[in-house]
Every structure is written in structure tokens, then in C-alpha cells.
Image 1 (cartoon, helix red, strand yellow):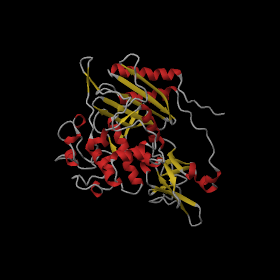
Image 2 (cartoon, helix red, strand yellow):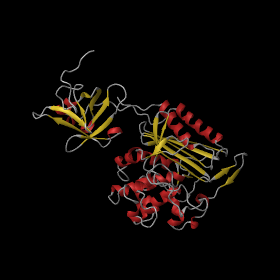
Image 3 (cartoon, one colour):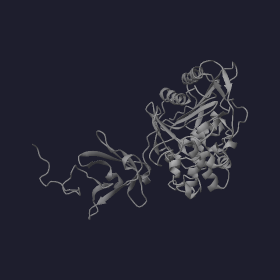
Image 4 (tube, helix red, strand yellow):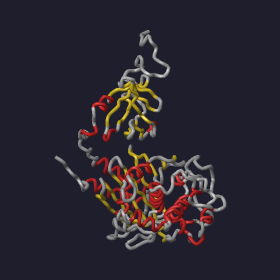
Length: 460
């Protein structure tokens, strides 16, 4: 018997709407929209507004600010997947004359390139792009503040460079690449460079009085890849599904997973987490959230995805400051995860073709010195090696065509696990990054570096 629950329970929906209502009231936002995605589809959206009887819905556009950076990062990784560049390439190899060409593409994606956070001159988010017609106007005379690769320093100009890189390598505008390579394949027809009705207006709310001031909406020009886009909760829900599982029309799941892996630590401050390739990573309420925050004058936004829970949440508001969209989006995920925990997939035996006696004979306990580990067989001839007691290095391994396995995570990521056999074909030990794992702790006669005392184990 199988059971499917597509809609949320009424009590869960009320808790979600209550969180949005509190956020709109306490954040003093003209309007606030929230949405939740579960297992590949948007299952809830709700909103609150300062205008009685008139509130935005999941199809109303808000400006999403730096959430745009995730789209730019996807375009860059697509170029890598097509073999047109390597993420470790220096920028200068593909985009000449920037003055920061020694910075690698990966460092720009992860904000570890040492570039300045902002452009020189006027506040770029509130001024005309005509003031910055060339990359030299975006970068200024001192674009680098620190040695590349030495730490995280968030950089909006860095993503301008990445947008220009896309244009140089692809041979079309960043906007055209975005439309044809991401928005159209994912069905994100309401994500645009400029506002298309229905859309929210951007407002500044006075910090000490309940009055508002309209914010200007500037075309960001060269800075567009860092923060130009307008989108809706419904469109961002589609993008969240992509960030969780990939989409072969845009990026394979393995490439999206690579983007979600930490590439550089987070900066100083209250935000605890790290940064991947264009994605913020946050540990909150015992779960890992991936996504991005965004802000431009008049708007704040956030999208968080919990891959493990099969959940994502979007929070959008049209105020320059006040609404805590990052906290609200995380709370929307938590509310659903706690109230309606995900059903695990039914246990099923492995396909017969993936199991043989030789593989089964390798499972069970192994010892690295006196540390005890268990080797477990997984799908597609993968294995997991994990400590049987206490803390230790747990890792999953993918089977290699030529034999053995390669580590996928943790300390052993990229390292090779192989079976070492005796002349008669029997298994001697496992070799993992030069570490010897034997069937018994310091097994007599085993190939343990330094040898095993011939007198064996003894008491006092």
C-alpha cells in the first residue's frame, strides 16, 4: 500500500500563514509573500499586505537582488560542462584586460577572489548604469583588496566579471543566455530583467515612523548578473526544484551537487555557514539549507532548499529593510518538516545485477589499527565505510569502472579505496589512501606498516 500526501494539512497551512503575517507586521513590510515546495511542486503560498483586501500572490513579481547570482553561476558551470572552460582557469584566459586576470573562475564563483565588495563611485544599486559603461568603471583603480584564495569576501563586481565571461565565451548577451539556457527550459516565464505586471513596487519604510518612500528601480547595466532579476514565488519554486535535483536540460544533478558543496567559508558576522559555487549554505535547525538571499533598494528576498527534507521555501517582501526574509524562509521549511516529516522511501533489496558473492564477502567489520569500521554495500556497487563506535571518518564511495572505489565526501573525498589480494587471490586487506584495513585488529601476518609484534596481544 502506498500513500501520497500532496496538499499540506490545514494546521500546517495556518502555521505558515501565521509566520508570514508576523513577518509582515514585525518587519513593517508593505507586502510579504511566502511559498513552500515539497517533493518537486509548490504546495502552498500565502501573503499579507498593508492594503485591506488586496495582497500579492505567487504570480506577483518582486525584485530578487543577489538571488540573480545563482543564475549567473549556473550559466558558468554550464560552460564548464560543455568543455569551454575549466573552473580553475584564470579569468584572463577567457576575458582579457580586466586587471584581475590571475583570479580563477572558481574563486569568483565562491567569493574568494579577493575583489572589492562594491563598485567605486556612487551607490550602484541606486544610480544609473550609464555611470559604469565599462568593466574598468565597475572595478576601479583598486579592484583587489586581498590575495586571491585566502578567504571569503563577498564581491558584487566579481559577478559582473562572471556575466561578462559568459558573454565572451558564449557569444551572446548574458540576458540572452539566461533566457534560452535556464528560464525557458525550466518554464520560468515570469522571471525577467525588467518588471512585468503584476509586480510589487519597491518601498523604503522610515525606521522611526510608519511612513514610506518609493525607491527608484534602476537598470543595473553591467552589474545585472549580480542582482538585476525580477521573479515570482511560483517561478522561484521551479528554480528550487532544479537546485534540489538538477535538470538535464540545464545542469546535470552531479553539477548542481558540486555547486552545493562548500567552496569557501562564510565571512565574519552572524551568518553561520559557508558558500558554494554561487550558493549560500546554511546550517539551521539541524538541517542544511542551500540557496541565496537577495536585496536591492525596495526589496528583500530569500530562497532556501533542504534537499534532505525534499522541501524549499521562498520569502519575498517589498521593503528596503526590516523584513527578515532569510529567517522566514528557514522557518517555513522548519514548520513543514516538523509538522509533516518526510516519509522515507520503502526499503527495497538491491537489483540482482548489482550484487555478487565477491562484493558480499567484503561487507562487514574492518579494522584500521584498533579503530573498528563497517563496510556496507549500496546501490550501483557503491559502498559506505563508517565507524562502528565513537567518532570517525565516514565516507561514501562510488564504484570505478576499472575496479575499486572513489570517495565522494568527507575526509576521503577523491581518495581511492581498493582491495589488495594475496598471490592466491584471497583478500589481504583494503587500502584507502595508504591506510590498511584488516579483518582483525593488527591481524598477524597482515600487511600492516611497521609489522605486528609476533608475541601477539597480551595482558599486564
